[in-house]
Amino acid sequence: MFKFIKKADIVLFFVLLAFGIGLSALSLFTGTSGQKVQIEVNGQPYAVYSLAENQTIEITEHGHTNKITIKDGAVQMSYSDCKNQICVNDGQISKTNQSIVCLPNKVMVEITGGEEEFDAISN
Amino acid sequence: MPSQTNRSGHNRRTQKTRLLAIGAMFACLALIFSYIEAIIPFNAGIPGVKLGIANLVVIIALYNMGPKYAFTINCIRILVAGLLFNGAFGAVYSLAGGVLSFLVMWGLKKTNLFSMAGVSMAGGVAHNMGQLFVASAIVSNLKMFLYFPVLMFSGLASGIMIGVVACVIDSRVPKQLFR
Image 1 (cartoon, helix red, strand yellow):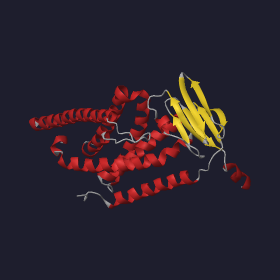
Image 2 (cartoon, rainbow over the protein chains, first blue to last red):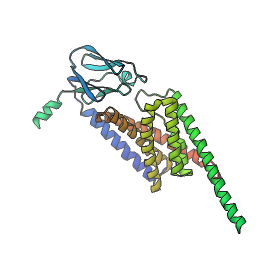
Image 3 (cartoon, rainbow over the protein chains, first blue to last red):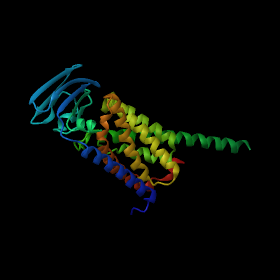
């Protein structure tokens, strides 16, 4: 049935697969639990909050509203007036290198801090 | 023999007209696929994960009508679909993905090493990559590439699926349609 598949296809498949697995391993294992929540709007730094403090932040920029909730060391986009609601469905993040992006509203929530800074010192 | 040259010239012209008509039909078909994709709730919860059934048409066109027609069909499809259902914002993403995936598919097809499934697989991955480039340019942050592995796997899976279907369809489509 699948006679039309050639050897090069299989090679390419495994190369892409290995590349994907490598990348996801990289992003999974390099993340440590972060300490700060960094918010960017329109590519510009907007504000930095502590992960330890429970609070809800409301951002209204360019006529768009996003609400970001920090609770028990995790952040989530609790409300967004964007159409696709992808950022709201993303759920909680708590590790460095993780981020929630709301593309329609150009709001990005990122976690920084944690052990990364110690690495910098030991280097 | 004037009648002979006249005849062959006539044939060439009818062939061109025929390709034009079929190209237009293909563009419509691709547009319909885009629409179907826009209305079916296939949303795995991960942004950018799509079936890409419109690519079916582009691949068939690439193999049977040549890169020029395939590229035009793809661009028309993306622009019109952008105006109709995805919004101009979505069209920018799609265009970047569409152009990149087309270039990759065309290049791989030219090497003659890959089957339709392989070409489509690489096209699916390239499409997602192109979209991510635009996304990271808009948010002006390279961290967007953390989404890349997810989109890569989804591109692989949907690309293979579409490629296999394209193979089956291509073997059934009467070839004299494009002559």
